[in-house]
Amino acid sequence: MSTLSRNILLSLAISGLIIGTVVYAINYLNQQRVAQLNTIEDQLSTDTLSVETQYSLLANAPCEDFAISSSSEGTSLSQEVSNLGDKLQYTENRLGGTDPQVIQLKNQYTLLEIRDYLLTEQLAKTCHTSPVVVLYFYSNAGDCKDVCDRAGYALSYLHQTYPNLRVYSFDYNLKIGALKTLETLEKVQPSFPAFVINHKQYYGFTSLTDFESNLPSSLFATSTATTTTKTQK
Figure 1 (spheres, rainbow, N blue to C red):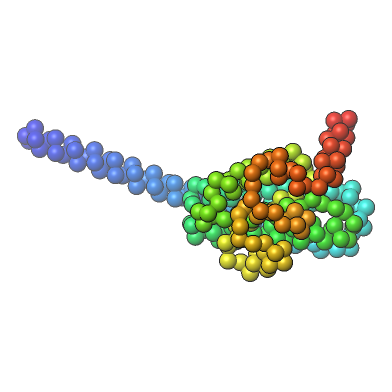
Figure 2: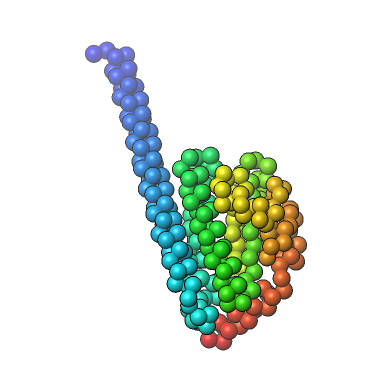
């Protein structure tokens, strides 16, 4: 066999190895992606059932029992909903907001958030509590990229700093009947980022300090008291 023939065969072998490696890597990543999406979907189903069950359990529960059993972050499900939202956001950043599976998961997560929000509102009416709730509406249509990103980071920081603050984030453009009804009831206009703080609308985001000025003073007083109590313990 000539040197030229050997070089050609060697080149073909190397090319085949490279192609095989790429195909294997793609298949592996696809399997990982499916596994990750399936995990999120299973968690969504579990949490949805959990919030519906909490509705039933709390319907006839005395308010003092709720006050004893709940943490400073409200219902035990609220933090789980928040953590799941972080995982979904990470997945969306990796796969893109137009991925069909991501959109389907966001639809499910949005319904879960609305259910948890309704539970918070019901408990406030029944037990005469005053939770501080922020409904955050953003857009993935390319008309709010930088500002909405900064607003999202700010809300994450505020939620960690003030555990009593409830934050629910919604993609305004999702085609879900329940979300459109919520937008209508809260009179949210398609100007992003949009916020509803205890049923009052705010638009735009400039800085964390300016946004904090829109939050009720009761949030900071309660959070300070909670922090002091934990420190004393």
